Amino acid sequence: MTLTLPFDNSYARLPARFHVRQAPAPVKAPGMIAVNAGLARALGLDAEALAGPDGVAMVAGNLVPGGAEPLAQAYAGHQFGGWSPQLGDGRAILLGEIVSPLGRVDLQLKGSGPTPFSRRGDGRAWLGPVLREYLVSEAMAALGVPTTRALAAATTGESVIRDGRALPGAVLLRVAASHIRVGTFQFFAARQDTEALQLLTDHVIARHYPGAEGPLALLDAVVAAQARLIAEWMALGFIHGVMNTDNMAVSGETIDYGPCAFMDEYHPDTVFSSIDSQGRYAYANQPQIAVWNLAQLASCLLPLIAEDDSEAAAQAAVEVATASIHRFADLYQAAWIAKFGAKLGLTAPTEADRPLIEALLTRMAVERADFTRVFRGLGEGRARDEFTDPAAFDTWAPDWQARLAQDAPGAEARMAGVNPAIIPRNHRVEEAIVAATAGDFAPFHALNAALAAPFDAAADDPFRAAPWPEQRVQRTYCGT
Ligand code: AMP
Ligand code: MG
Image 1 (cartoon, protein in one colour):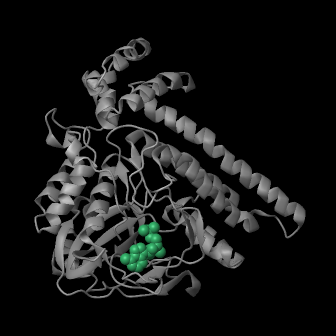
Image 2 (cartoon, helix red, strand yellow; image 1 turned 90 degrees about the horizontal axis):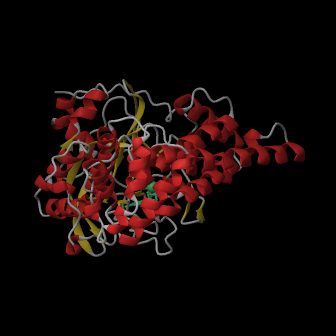
Image 3 (cartoon, helix red, strand yellow; image 1 turned 60 degrees about the horizontal axis):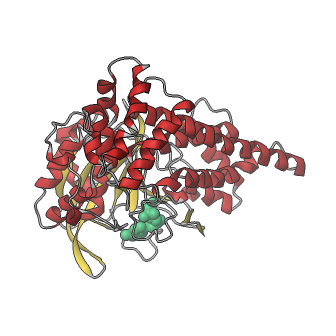
């Protein structure tokens, strides 16, 4: 069965300074780990062909399919606040774009060999981060969060060395609305390449925000998309872990799953990433970090927003761009109330409901109650069991009941549709990676299947359980 993909590579048609042509490096012994047949079908692709010999060869990088124009994208970025004028795809290669029933999407290989942007890295990925991204990105999609997707993953039959250990190599075939980042704009802004910035702006508008007229409207649209996205993360207890500007997609999709994690015990200061020693990307900091990143995007767009080269025009551009960034706060707060109000079963939550929501979160933080289990428990009548001191819940619940009594009936059903029972818990992801590294992929497949239906698990489903103290994962790693 031959694999035919309807490539139409608009990014490859941008000028040469946007990318470097780079084929994936072939590997010794490709082996398919998983094919996301549902996603393949939704994209109008032949899932069987993708699972066949051509498919595995393509995912592993041994076969460049007809119509692909493989390249590494150039970008820059602020990493933990520190500026890097050149990052780029060091372990990823964009095969090209297809125009699918889901719209135009990128097909990208991650872990497919060195590129001119690899610096000291090997361009490879080991199995752990590939499985983590597969599981978590697909879980996010099932939870309704904008995200890149995992279409397939393959082992390479080669080892990669990480921290002195030889580990199995793997490649992820990732699908994204695009891989254009805040850092892509920064790459050209740092080079004062206004012509490239204009081309990039036009490209992003055409691709993601066709209604936006000009750079300021684009900024407004990205600000709004990020406000919605971060509210989604917060409502799930999701911590991205590396919100560097090169890891923020202008499309508004969650991208670059590294040391990301869903909280078990709730506390706003929670950090998992081993490299985030200052807690810059802690759970509660995510909205303000998004604003910081968006301000970087705004400053890149200033030369395009300004009407002419005059000092007055530059000043006016700063003012309107600043106003655009300031709108994040209101958009985010409204999205946050909508999300958390729905988690309490409310049909039309308003700012007046904030104290009720915050009172619950405060009690959860004091008690270190399990974020997912408390919210799921609200609709199942067992949230109080999640508190070591049930009084912490009992003294809050009457206010909530009184508020629900003013609302439409059916709160239980509404809550069951927004509060997941199953999330990719760190200890489960870790367990799947450890087993797969030893050759057993069954736990990975079982977890992946459970994550596909996060809202309708049986009460005793083992994937709902919080970790035992000894299972608790304290640290997550970039693990490139
Ligand atoms: P990230 O982990 O996505 O924040 O990556 C930051 C930068 O490091 C990007 O430019 C990556 O392409 C690069 N990078 C990460 N891992 C590797 C690797 N194994 N080989 C080469 N480049 C890498
Ligand atoms: Mg990255």
